[in-house]
Length: 134
Image 1 (tube, one colour):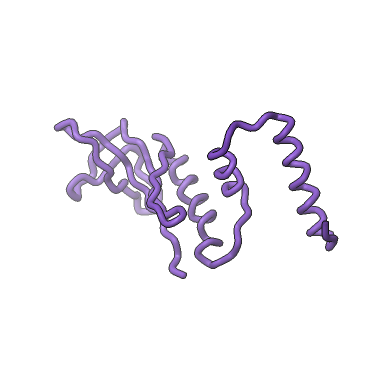
Image 2 (cartoon, helix red, strand yellow):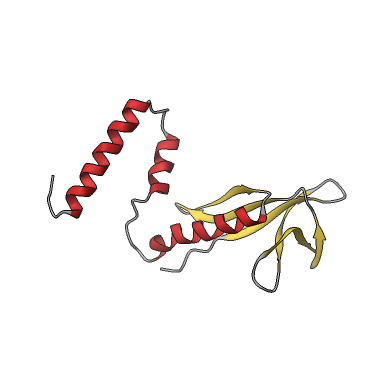
């Protein structure tokens, strides 16, 4: 399977009032130049810009806002690449992000239910790790 790509973009407001997604400006050492966007191939300073990640999730293109901080955007980019790597390798993922995504789509969970679910998951994973089956 082809490796899944995660793209970083910055949303800026141009002088004519339009908002566009543009490529961010990178330094020579592969770090982000905070607040800069490539507009028509020319770096422009846009301190109001917000960084976004674009990737495929369940065969749909998703844009996820990660904030205005360039360092936080880089961390989010690397984390998303690491989260999507097992999927591109064909491995089954039961990571925290998948569980959190499923729960966020459902109804709110009470604290007691969350504790009970957590304890069940811990028991299940400990049993698998110790070679036992439930």
